[in-house]
Length: 95
Image 1: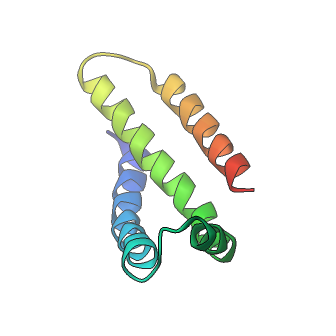
Image 2 (image 1 turned 30 degrees about the horizontal axis):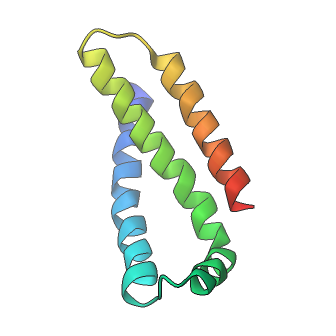
């Protein structure tokens, strides 16, 4: 892993610690998992999820790309295309 890819992996990993803790506190500790409550929470935290989704997708797909490159596969474009599709699909479902 080189250059900006490594830096973004590090930064998104650090950001995910805070995002995931906040997500668990809001959804599982302070909130309810009832359907109506989840819908209200999605509407009220829409900006949070718009930021959270690309960070999770980049971190996951970049990690898979790096692992595959260590085993000799050179599929970096495939992983970035899959990441963009996953982000677009997630944002489509959020709205």
